[in-house]
Image (cartoon, rainbow, N blue to C red; front, side, top):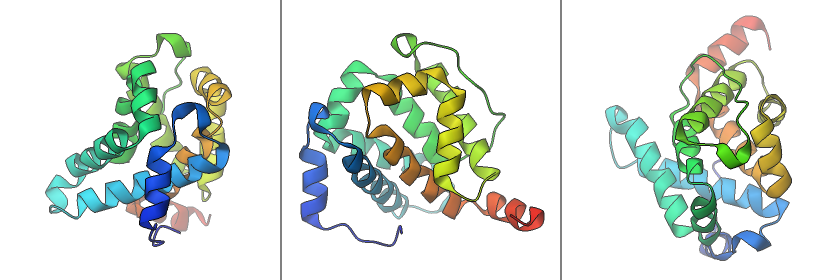
Length: 176
């Protein structure tokens, strides 16, 4: 439910956890914080600035969260991944064979485009994320290292699913 307002205490807690102490349940909370940052940033401008303001929301989230700052130091491509996912643009889906240690921004953008396309073909965000992770070895490896990753991506995918007009029309047309 993306209309749920997070309390200041929840946001403070989510942002103050360090990377080593994040749990699976924290991933859902971080996902909610990220989605709220994106929504808040997008309210600052009109529809023409929608995409760029979504990226601003991602950057704000990455800056205010202790864990995300630590993660970016280890995996700088994570910013590009979240930026592209926030755009929710349908492009040709790609799988990425790059190992986690060798990931870069270009690979991250290819990964993100794959998620947006998979979201169109499903009615459940968790199923889309499961499929997306299963297709990409780097994401499987990322999840092995960071158990909170999947719930975070499910929250983002659910938001994208709920706000995608094209996906809604396709699912209605197909009877899903």
